[in-house]
Image 1 (cartoon, rainbow, N blue to C red):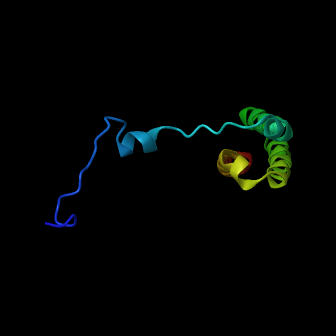
Image 2 (image 1 turned 120 degrees about the horizontal axis):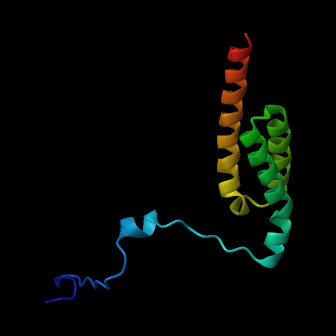
Image 3 (image 1 turned 180 degrees about the vertical axis):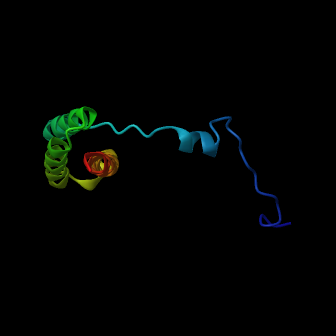
Length: 105
């Protein structure tokens, strides 16, 4: 009997299942240089969230633009979460502006 005829051995280590591993949030650890480079981005994101919370849509648009400028300065792998958040903020800003236009008429 050759080695090809034997059944393959599957070792089960008792670790997390595939679904459990995929469900865990992936924490990105930044180096000191990366943290320093991300500081202006974090500041712009904080200004954006405050403007959206106040429903100051003009300030929110300006802050979102500033945040995009900072995102574009950094590498893509450093700003994945921020890009998602900026898209969500865009949707919230557009919905808020539309709501105010309807209430104003």
